[in-house]
Length: 126
Image (cartoon, rainbow, N blue to C red):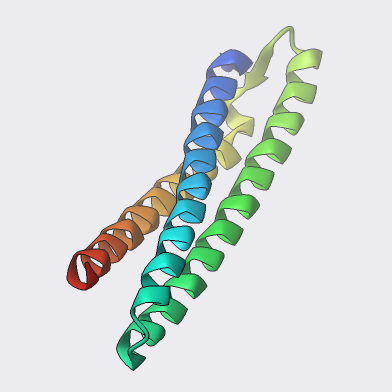
């Protein structure tokens, strides 16, 4: 039976959680910036964009929370298994790890697109 070290998987999970935490913090900063911009620009177009971005920031923050929760749950399950196998887990039992990696990469992509869209918006209204 092939095994892999729980340390390697734990390292990936920690990297993902740190990045997700950073993205969530930045979303909060974006939301504060949006509030400042909207307070100075009360046109209908700006108000519509404010609502759009507020919704997107909320959705992405929720997606981040869900993904972080799923990562934590997976790590708990893997740690329990590793205790039974001297710090290793069966490689055949970690497909969830690869699904989480894919979800993380998708979240990074969506976040980057939203950040770019928000930056473009700010450059137009400033």
